[in-house]
Image (cartoon, rainbow, N blue to C red; front, top):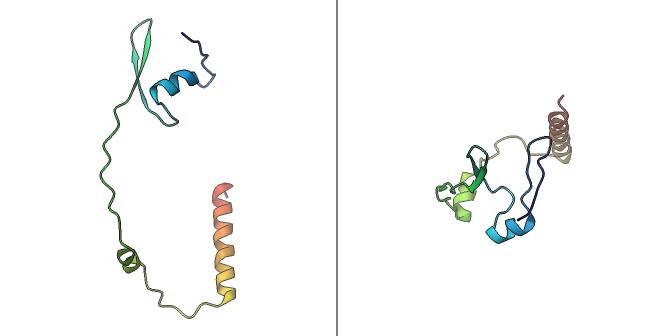
Length: 95
C-alpha cells in the first residue's frame, strides 16, 4: 500500500509503481466511483475512434488550392510572414 496527497486543485498523483504496473500513462482517463467512505478509480473504457483515412501523395496534392494571384515577390512573402507572426503574437497575448 502507498499514500498520496491531494493538491489544492484536487489532483491526486498515482504512485509510479502503480502507473507502471497497470500501464497508465499521461492522459489516461478514469471513472470515479463514490462508494461512501471509499473512492474507486477505474480506467475508462477507450472510445472507439473511427479509422483515419490515409491519403496518397497524389490525393493530397489534388486537394491543394491553386494560387491564381500575381507572382509573389520576396517582399510579399516577407510581409505575409510578418503579418502572420504579429497575428499569432496578438492571439497568444490577448490583444
